Image (cartoon, rainbow, N blue to C red; front, side, top):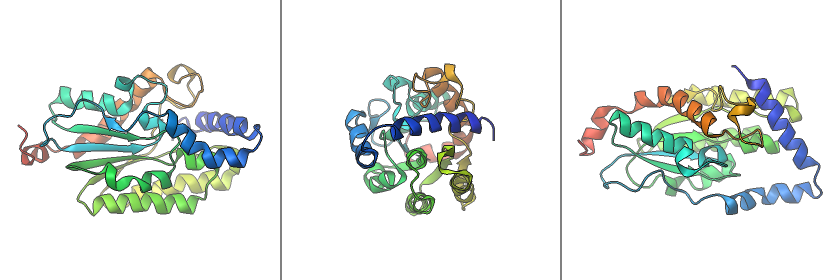
Length: 243
């Protein structure tokens, strides 16, 4: 996998900065709530079309929410634009919440999957890695998300992530392996690294060095589209009554 080391260095800088603050445990416990207050509400990437449109849901953290970007620059919004230009009548739902962990994503899965959801894009785990949360718990949470979505007949696209090196080589290797294992589950489509081609490249990220800027988001969208499009059978849209 390319560009893993630059990402790890960037994640390491963020973790070290957090560790330099007083009362870190309390901050860690409350970070999700604080970030969520600053995050935009989960919303559709475009005004809601006819109810018959099938949906693609992006379940993720700040990378999905589009932290630091205008709404139309987020990856889900770019995918919505691509769908429209390519003639796929799907509605994209951006269910990204800044600061969310795999446990947070699991906790809001059911209401994120309301409506005629055909595809679930899972982008979770970066915050688990930043906080050094147990890898076994992350794997269990992501497995539950996958199996519960599939039980509803929803196609799953899982995106991989990397952990910072701060917690040791064993942790980062175990963290990476979670995605490799889940990516081989039946009927799971796997995008090995969400930030491929973007992580660690300064001119493709905002000032924090962690979140893609508009140009970086466009690179992610192009990479994701190659993985996502094969899941969007025209017949699925026809069955929904959309021409």
